[in-house]
Amino acid sequence: MTTSETNLLQLSDVEVVYGQAILALRGVSLEVARGAIVALLGANGAGKSTTLKAAAGLLRAERGEVTRGTIHYGARDVGRVPARDLVHAGLVQVLEGRHCFPHLTVEENLITGALVKSPARAALKRDLERVYARFPRLRLKRKLPAGYTSGGEQQMIAIGRALMAKPALVLLDEPSMGLAPQVVAEIFEIVRTLHEDDGVSFLLAEQNANLALQYASYAYILENGRVADHGEAAALRAREDVAELYLGMNGKDRVSFRPSRDLQPRAQV
Image 1: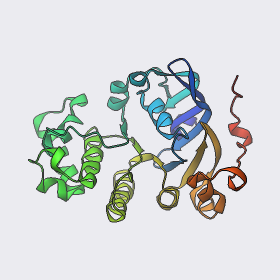
Image 2: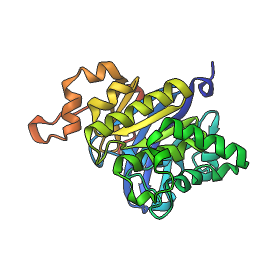
Image 3: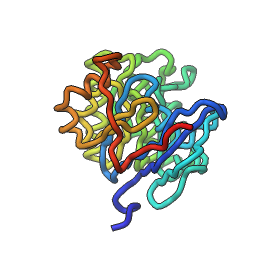
Image 4: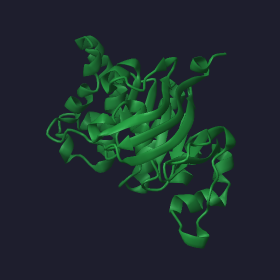
């Protein structure tokens, strides 16, 4: 079986530089199998968002570029493919902070997610109904400006907008940020349902390691732009050092991970 058949996304030894000066990722390698939920864990500044943006083709907007390594989506090398083309191919990112259009209605926000594929009116209506079935709260507020909805509802809008593009893979960045625990639980249950019922794969960047590992089957831990460790989610969840890394402890209490042999990054020059 080929790599493209088993893996939907594969990053190999990826290095990212911002502004031709700041080395943000140092030889990151990871895989997302088809039909999987994979967690990307680490503290602030570890490189989680940069990894997702590299995969989604969004680095250029922030003066970033992949300077080494390869990124494959299925069998296709997408290291230099524009984000719009990736969305059309089924790879969609939900950015950290939700980024709704506050002056557009909830429904108008959702529709923007479908525009890249230019659906017919009947198809657009069916897709909206599918999203509303997943997010009943959005149906009730579909005519309300998105800026007047709660943080949890805006996260639902952002995920719903991604679903309008009919993705095979969603790159979900910090879905729990700034939300109440009850809302976070609801968001993660929606992720589980989308995965189980619709077959959507997820690469989930999250600081809340304990929560992410409950839903993921596999996880990677980033530290200072490197893959510090990786493994089955259940095994990582049982390890105390994972929590210590997530908490960002310093000095003698800080765990120092060594990258796995098959994911050895290049030394910084």
